[in-house]
Each structure stands twice: as C-alpha cells, then as structure tokens.
Length: 581
Image (cartoon, rainbow, N blue to C red; front, side, top):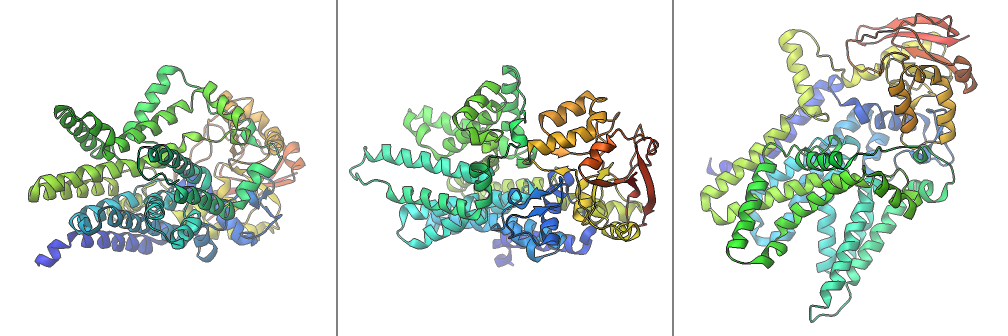
C-alpha cells in the first residue's frame, strides 16, 4: 500500500490516459469535437488530400476555393499530418490528442532530468503531474504537438551546448516534424539567436574566450531542418510572386488604452488558441511567489539576485509576450515590420503568446519546486496538492477545445435526459452517410458547389468540390472573383462586407440579413430564407450546385432549381440541393 501511495502520480497520469482513451474509443464519432478552426478548417484539408492522393504531390490542386495549390496546405513531413495519412480522420484526431499529452509529459521529464540530475526523483511527482497538465491544455488542436514539444527543443539546445555529440544535432534537425515554422519555429530561432548574442557578450566576462560555436551550429541545423520539412511553405513565402489575400488583410488598429487593456487581458487570461487556464490558480500562486521572492531579495539587499533568478526571467518573458500581442494591434508599428521585411506582410508576429502557456506552467513548477525545497514534508504535500488542483481545473474547464470535457458532458446529458445537447458530434458535423446518399441521388461527378447555411468543410470532407472554403492564404484574384458572387449579400450587411473585405479567409455564401448563417448547432433558425447571390458570377466560376440547410424561398428568382430534399435520422441536417438553371 505504501508503495502505491508513493507512486500516486503514476496512477494519476496513466489513469488519465486510460480514461481519456476509453471515452474517445467508446464514444467514437459521437464525440463532441471543437469545430472552430478545427473541424471547419484542417480536418477537411487532410481528408481532401487523402481522397485525392496529394499528400506528397507537386503541381497539384485540392478541390476547394476553386482549386487550391497543395503547397499552401499542411506539410507532409509533420507528425500530425502523417496521422491523417495512415488513419481514418477521427482516429487520427484522437491519436493526435493522446500523442500531444504524451509528448509534453515525455519532454518535461527529459528536461527535468537534465536540469536536476539525481535530484529529479525528489521532484518526480511534481514533474509528472504538471507535465501532464501542460500536455492536456486545450490549445489549438492542429498545433497541439507543437505546443507540447517546446520543452523538448529546450532540452536539445541544452544538450548541444553542454555535451559533444552529433546525435543532438540530428535530433534538432528533425525537430520541425513536431513543430510548425510560422507559429513556433521562427520564434524559436529568434530566441536562439538572442541566446547566441548573450553568450557572445558573456564570454568577454569569462576567462574562457571561446566562441559559442555549438549554439551557432544549432541555429543553422534547426534552420535547415525547418526548410527541409516545410519546403512548400518557404517556396510560397519566398519564391512565389502570386498576390494573396495577405496583401489586403487588416489586423485592425487599437487606441493606446485598448492596447494596454489587451495586454492586461492576454497576460491574465491568455487567448483562445493558447488557453492556459492559468487565471484561477497558476496566476495567483505565481503572483504571490513573485512578490515573496523579490521582497526577500530586497530585504537581503541582494539586488543582483532579482536579475539573476530564473523565475523572474520566466515572468519577464510572459510579460514580453503579452506586450508584443498588444503592440501587434498598433498599426504604425505593424507597418514598420512589413516595410522592413515585405514577406512578413500579414504575418501575425504576436504569436509569441503561443509560448506563454509553457512559461506559466514552468513558473508554477519552479514556485512549487522551491516549496518542496524549503518547507519539508508539508511543503511537498502542499505543492503536490496545488499541482493536482491545477490539473483538475484544466480537465474540468469549459474551454473551446476541451473535447474530453464536452464529450463527457454530452454523453452524460444524453443518458440522464434522454436527449442530445445542441452541439454536434464529429459524426453529425460531417454526416458522411447523408452526403453519400445525396451524391448518388444527384449523380454528382465532381461539379463545383457551395454550402449555404452550414460549413463548406462538410462538403469538402465528403468529396464535394467547393468554390467556397476557409483558408488564410489564397490568391487575391480569386477573392475578388468570389466577392462578385456574394456582392448582393455584402451590400445589404455592412458588418459582413467589412469582415470579408478586410480579412477574407472565410469565403462563404453570406446572408443578406443575418450576420452569420453558418451554423453547426442542432437547432437552426434564420430570419430570412432568401438567398442573395449573383448566380451568373457563380456559374462563371464553374459553379453548379448549392447545398443548403435552408429552404430557399427565392430560389426561382435567383436562378436555382431544387433537385431534392434529403435527410437521415442520424444527421442533424435537412439538405436542400439546388442546381443553377
């Protein structure tokens, strides 16, 4: 029994993996999976590449947005992409979730062992619990593994700087398989460059005057690894002369007061793609320890200690990331960046905030680790309790990407109330059986189509070529051509016009009255059943079918002919399929 109690952290970690795996396996495609920037974006892209056999293809098009180059879609030399090559989409998604948690845990263990050596066993419960907590943070799913692997790249850089051996360089070269350049890799290289400069400055203060060659080589190796693994991305950024929607995207401009407010909010709460759920416990503990730590240094008149303490450095970088996030919305500053480096036009350099979740939990770990060190048995009990509570807060947080929580809630709701929640499951969102029936009934043979009242991603996933779609990088020429299709709707709703004209990543059919008719809820109501569309412009792009969740009342006037109405018991959709006259 004592042995079991001493290994409570192992039981907790493996118990979570077992529980999460069982929930997703038993629920199957009835699991509630986040839609925003997930089911509506990346999953259908992987499915289209699988259906068309274009994962490794060159000079190939993928059938959405009128035919998009495969080169602008996720790289094939990516662990997450590989999952969708070899597994069905739902299985790949679940495998990605579990891998993300496992990679984060493994990376944190490696880093802790490297940092603390033989003392690692002392902090083992803390490392495992907080490593799992970091791994199950409900961050941007498609880049979850990128988030999870941040401690791994820190470990590799430490090894390169401290130990000779080509194996560490080889591992660093292949690290981009776990990461993504424009969200993480570029920032990691920038941090490495800053560290290299710091080493150059510091060597003057030491007797050892050797240049930090290992660090320089590490930067070169990682750079080459990024280029090799994401050669398509670099080709698009540096070699293509196509004018894309990036040239007309407007990030918005905030007043000074709004910028400071944004900085404060992202420091306290994070942002939805990088939700660290730190506001409830991690932030208060870190704030209290920050005050205690620096008061102690001041009391002892050890001013230099304030600047040397790793904990203070972590908090400083979190503040820096938050400030950069806010400054991104300072339009004049953004223009300077774009002027100095035109390829970065439209690039969101405020993604430094994606590193903050790791920094928050690293700071939290360091505070609890020091509680371990100085307060004996009760310090360890308190630290373990706080770490466990932090883990439970993440598990039970009702955040956008907490698929495990939403799936458990949905299943419990169905069992207790005999009804479904309003959220659609993975299987319902894509409704494969329904669309298989529809394709057969209308004799679908690859004709260009569009979705009205639901996400084009559903059509794309089901093998239907779409003129509409969601992508942050496609040609400005196509955006203008598609705009002619939806111009009648945009002219009626100013908010929709501004949304499309200043961003344009969501090239959807818009309503002429409602701000949004794209809906992924079980219940579905609209205020106007008319469609506002330039049918001739639609046909000019090759459009043939419109798949609608709405019984369009002005179909005849719009030049549309109803082909049929389709529904199935297992699907939430009633589909009205129209063909252009």
